[in-house]
Length: 470
Image (tube, rainbow, N blue to C red):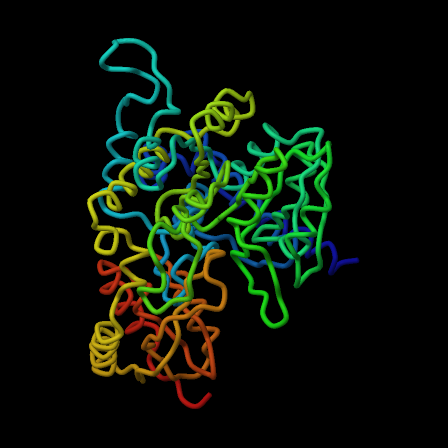
């Protein structure tokens, strides 16, 4: 009993030594924190830290931290509270359109357009010529029509929204025919059948996973059929014993039978990918030339712009979509429209390869990537980092060109405790993400932006020195 009593008395004495919140607020350091974060948040931080100390005392702690230590812990708590969860990243993975890292980085002009629209007011829904209210639906549509050959276009907030709007507007309560080989799921659990069900359309599957013939579609068309949906295989390949009718054949069949041909192209390719040694990717222009009624695609994949869903087609069809009540719920904001318009302008004036980061990375010659990797290697060797340059492959990613790669050169770091290195680099500002393969930490220069090279190499020099055998 005596021992327990002494322990209780010791705890009570330590608790009495704890400073009050009011006392801590009088310290110069706390005064500075209050000026920056506000009195209310500072009080919450100090109370949180003091409660943690009390819990530690009851768990066996035998001392009370100094006032300066408590205030410093409060500072760290406040910094963590207000720290953004959306942080910039140096992408060293070699995946050009990395969905987890924000897909397509924007061009400098697109960023400037975004800033101009965001830092003040803009003509989002105002017609300067008429001096009256306008419509946000007109922004970027002229550029899209000119670039794709469509009569009209509509922008919503992503491609899933575009597909949902298209199916809801034209197929609700009726049947939509789709090949079993196109019943796809893409990142984040987005499944074409689920979107079709949400739209109120009734799904009619035809063919098999690997082979669907024109006659399968023809046999499935009934009085209840509203359209045929074609969903491009944007994130996987069917190889081997496969068959599928051409888009032109399906369009002809649909129109002969009085139903719509709806095409989810997905990737937003406006340039010919074969020019860069990649597999062929269906282009938006080709889909419209095939005569589809509506084509949908993303703004932030191969188009290389901000997140957006884009619908192109003839003037009457797009007009119906624009007037649908769901279009308001799915509309984009002024920042997306500004960045999208600037991105489309790069295509219009023929500078997409130079200005749009996705295409600049795709078009970058292997020799240039190798020269950069060699420069990095020499600089890191001088800093005591065991670095080398090896052959590798970059991928497009982002649900585009599945299985298609570009030859690249990788900066390889050899040292022990690679997971420890990777974790330390992720804590950097900006965070650095690479990959571990064959007992080496790898960085692909192709996906590192020019202004990120210095912080990348500085961080590697700090963290990547060899630590003995692995």
